[in-house]
Length: 146
Image (cartoon, rainbow, N blue to C red; front, side, top):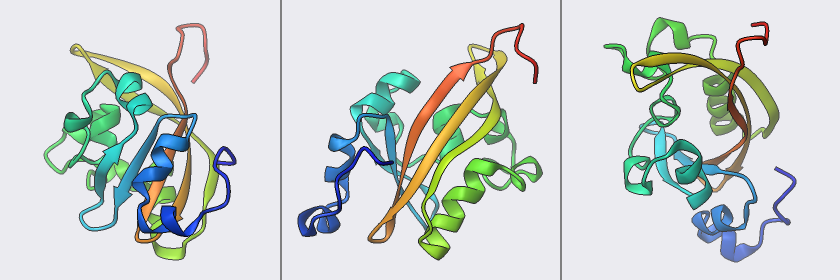
């Protein structure tokens, strides 16, 4: 998240202002319940969703992760226990430690089709929120090994 200059006092009071400065798609997350408060326009474009359809949802729901569609839901499904993205966000909330270039592969459900996606995120705590920037979100090609 080196795209952002050092935090000014005004941005500490209004972390949403950080989102407009970021060159990457970004989500502003709250701790309890752990869900998206808002996102920048680039995130809406990346996920093909209106910002109103992002706010109030968990990260996996925004990404359309297959595990967010289970009865337990995003972050609570047994498959989420070792999710690198969830764990980075939780650790940033609890310790304040930023994470950079956290990579994983998520199975994404779009149009009743499941496709593996390369996902890379970074996290940073601002006041009581965490900003998650999405550095990479792209479908894997059939010739890429898993």
